[in-house]
Image 1 (cartoon, helix red, strand yellow):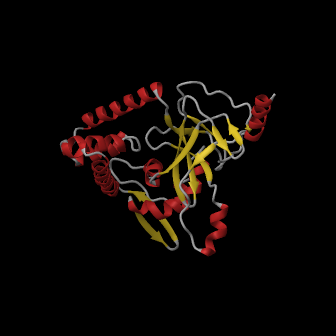
Image 2 (cartoon, one colour):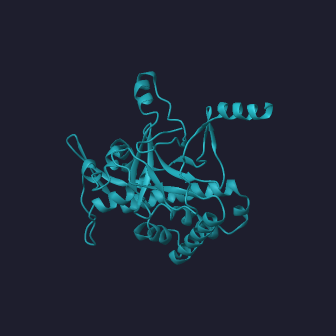
Image 3 (cartoon, rainbow, N blue to C red):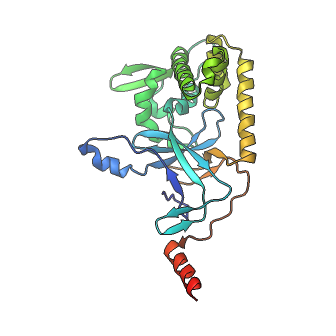
Amino acid sequence: MAWCEGLEAPRLLISPPPPNSSEGEDVVRKANAEGCLLSLCHPQSGKPACYHLRGGSLHELNWFKQSYGSWFLGDYVCEDGSLYITTPVDPIFVLLPIFEEARMKKTTDQGVFRQLDEILYVDGYPGYQHLFSIAKDTMNVVCEVQEIGSSKFFRLDNSRVLAWLCCKVQYLKATLLKLDKNYAAQEERETLKEVISILGEYVKDEPWLTLLCSHLHLDIAEAQKEIAKTERDTSFLEITSTPSHTFQSKVGNGKGTPSSRKQAKKQKTETESQNIKDMFRRATRKGTS
């Protein structure tokens, strides 16, 4: 259960436990147990989205709402039955767009090297500055790095990004085959299209999906049709069933409250939480009177 600045009523948040740490890091681990909410640009749409930074790990925040439901929180009933779920996300997906922009690539050259503090300074999004340590440890996978004295300079490299995306393709393909035997029966080309549609939720068509499809000898137009089909199916579920959405937010400085991307129906404002014991006492008095 988590409370955020601006929230007057409790909300239920389910999140993986923070990574194990040594005894010397207990103080830091406990201090970061609840983590903080960050407003960052969604890597595919570019719209504000809410992420949860906890224990040095980045998670995307999703919202799930049933048509009817409440939560038992200790001795109380929380009228709002919505659920907030965080799932780990590869930070490279989130950082890729700002590193691409920061290199200022032109057709005649590969762009410039820049320091992390410059790259992570994004106007209107101070949350990126919380990702300094994560970027320092992960972005060398997709970047060229030059060291001058004690300073490091990063520049995004297309060939490294492509190699990283190919690793994601192989991992997702193997995962789909384990999750559903039907994937083993279909042609590999069809499975690759579905993998591309999944990656298309986190990377932009240009240049990354186009580059990846070219490498895999896939038609980008066919892959985009698969992505559009996935989006239509998601929209149908949002209208006819209980939706789950990545959060959009206007969270500043690691604190704040996100708002959901879409809602099939307007949420009822929570008015109060009732004590369960009091409810049973009233029911008992009515039964004995």
